[in-house]
Length: 135
Image 1 (cartoon, rainbow, N blue to C red):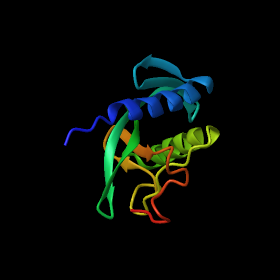
Image 2: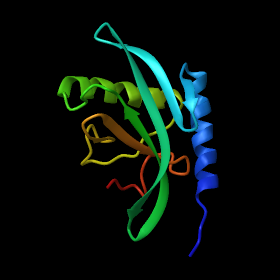
Image 3: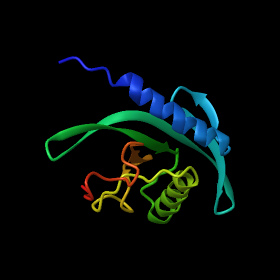
């Protein structure tokens, strides 16, 4: 089966990127934004990368958009990762998008590795979950 999800996914990414740009982010490339912010009085540059991923629930595969926050700092440091997760959650609230809810995720929305936090959204699921369920 050949299905092209790229066109619809890119339209959603473009819509959300425009919202972030209107809130002070700079576009660096397709799907890549940057913003200079202050954490603990120190100026930092954070990067948001947007790309589609397929998530599966109840034998249904649905494309969601991954927003990956990249930083050269080690986001494993607990206080910093909590601060940056709260910041990005608030950035999505400003544009009225609820992040995908996962009760097993870091702060209920994030996958975390050494240098990035990932969260998901889908404009067709404005409450951030499928059928009143979280993964």
